[in-house]
Image 1 (cartoon, rainbow, N blue to C red):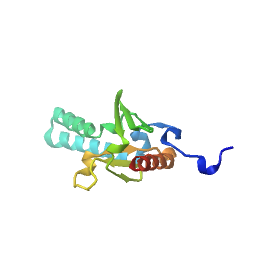
Image 2 (spheres, one colour):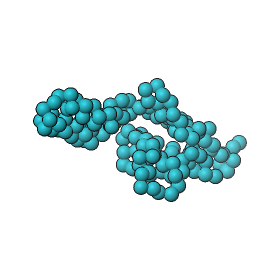
Image 3 (cartoon, one colour):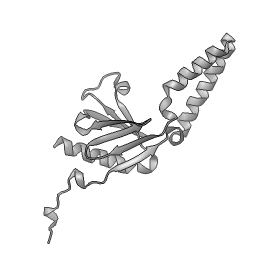
Image 4 (cartoon, rainbow, N blue to C red):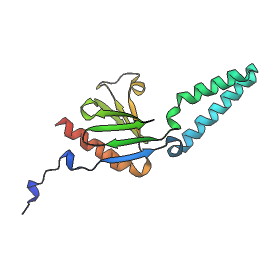
Length: 150
């Protein structure tokens, strides 16, 4: 017979959460704004300079700065850490490496330093979370962080 006091939940008992996200479809409004601004700025560069190669260069530079909107990314939260697959490249952020974090409306911003700096958003890693997985991923994230803090 197993008593309630004898049951201990370890990180290995927790199932792994895997999900795939395409930010272009998940964040429709902000993606639409970004694409509209890119089109408007490309048109403005062409209209002001009259040179199509400059307009194309401006468009490529603007879209290159938001390239993560256009590709599917896969994430996995496990006992080891957070693993991200992009273009077949795998990157794992181990739980002890996470110094601080900010839970935002559309995901979690993982920061490399415990104290806040002005450029933290640039140095950190943003983990987007689909709406249907938001609560489960946030709970699992906090569970694993608490386990590594002990």
